[in-house]
Image (cartoon, rainbow, N blue to C red; front, top):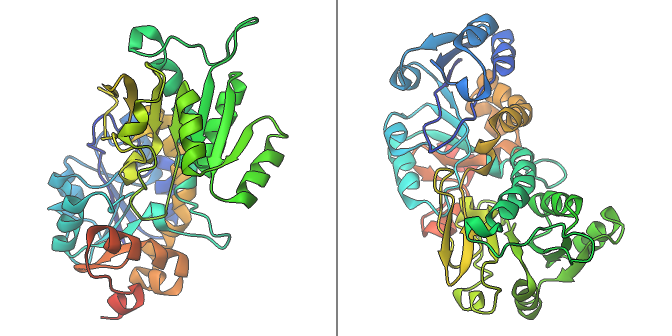
Length: 371
């Protein structure tokens, strides 16, 4: 199969869909790889590194899209990219379609077979291709929040770790999944006072064991959420419903009860955000203020640390990518976890949460592939 890797064009996105190490794996499986020139510049990978790994270098993204059977990316295709996709081609990348009707329309019109990293599952019920970026984003959320809390950046002027004689900052993490776990680890490492809210009692027990009582855990009722958010200096939104739009848990009305200059970091913004007042921002303009509350809602947080995140992502995606390259659509039929990753196939939505979020008809993956 002919594998293509274009350079990412989303604002301040420095990751790359294929590292030179991944290219070697595809070539070893008998596939040809075409990489757009300077696609790996953000992680320090030169065109010469890709050619040494067995890839050919394309001068333009158009050349990559036109001459590839499968496109491997990091972020969702932008308008100039989705119009270059075609029927019979496989797209393997993050999509986050539920809050993005325009991209969904573009992919449906293209006829492409689109496999979304964020909905591929594993035998343990996890999301193995999303997990590494959730780990990165969870840890980055505390760094970003701590910076936004500085007075010069519009925040309250609170040091998360405090100092002897002065209480530490209060961090509230909404959601105890992978993002929430790693956010809590970073916040505790800085010396903050941390509370994690979740609606799963087994998960709260697990978190209590993981942190050996070093965090507060609380069942996420409306009252508990209000109480904790009102006391917080920094709130991390870490809620995920696989494939679906994130629920709006913190309303605009709640902002009125928060401390002025407090910060919210919405890691769920890729799925539409879990704060009512969230809208996507970029690394070049990451924050905005509403009702005295600083919002950080960058939609590609791991892009800020591309060397770490690109390698972590490639480690997670390579096995399924090779299966798709080796077997094409048959790989999706043969593997229920890849079928869960199939979001769109030849003009049909094949993921139920995406279809429900956008009010579109859903076709079961097996039926769509068989047709």
